[in-house]
Image (cartoon, rainbow, N blue to C red):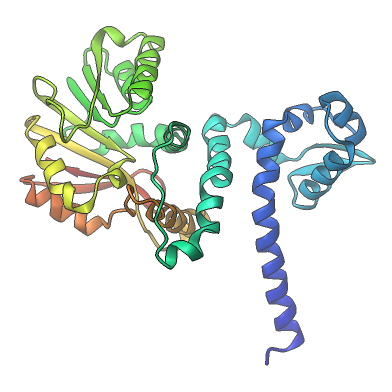
Length: 336
C-alpha cells in the first residue's frame, strides 16, 4: 500500500484536477457576466454583485474560488484582476481565448460526460451547429499571426498571385493574405452559406473584397473555381474529411495549382517532447483528438506520415513540413 506521503501527494493531484475542471466554467462566467471587466477596478463582492444585479453570495463564492486559484488578487475585502486574468482579458487573441473557454464548457464538457455511453456503442452526435462551427473557427485563430509568418518558410508560398482557401470560414486568413499581398487575387470556398456571408463581410472590412470571391459549396462536390492558383490552403479543417477522402481532396486541389504551386495544410498534430508539454499542446492535442472522435461526422487528428503518403499518392512531387508553434504541435504540411 502507498505510504501516507504518497497518498497525500496523489490526493493533492486529484484535488488540483478537480479545481482545474471547476475553474474553466468560472472563468467563462466571469466574462459572460461582465465580472472580469468590472474587476479592473478593485471591488468588494457585495458592491460588485449590486452593480451587476447578481446574487451576492454566489459572486462572493466565485471570487473566493478564483482567488484561491490565482486568477484574482485580494487586498482587504476587495478583489481585483491578477496578472493571468488581466492577460486573458487584454491579449490580442482574447476573442479566440474566450471562444476556447466556451468550447470547453459547451462542447468538450458534454462530450466527455457522454464518453461512457459512447464507448459502449451509443450513437455519436453530429457536429454541425452553427455556433459550434463559429467557435471552432475562432479558436483556430489563436495561432493565425504565427501561421501567417510561417507561410514565408514554405517554398512557393512567399508571393502568391492567386490564392484558394478551402473551408475559408469567416475569411480571416484570406483577408490577411490579400492585405499582405496587394496584387493578389483570392477565392474562398465555404460550405455554410451564413459563414460565407460573414467571410464576405470580413473581406469588405479589410477593403480587399474587390480582389476576392467567396463561393458556397462542398469543395469535393461543387464545380471547382475557375483558373489556376499559386497557393491552396486548408487551415485546421482536415479533420472534416475522412482519411479515405484525403487522396481525392489533395488530387482535386493539385488539379487547380499552377506549375510550381503549393498546397498548404495547417493542422494540430500529436507531438511529444518538453516544449509541447510545457506549452500544454501535447495534452491539448490529445483532448482535441478525443473530442473530434466523439462526433460521427468528424475524424481524429491526422498522422503526419499518413498525410505525406496521401500527398504523394495524389501526385505531389515534393512534400515538407514547417512548424507554426515551438515544438511543432501546430504545423504546416505542404506539397508542390
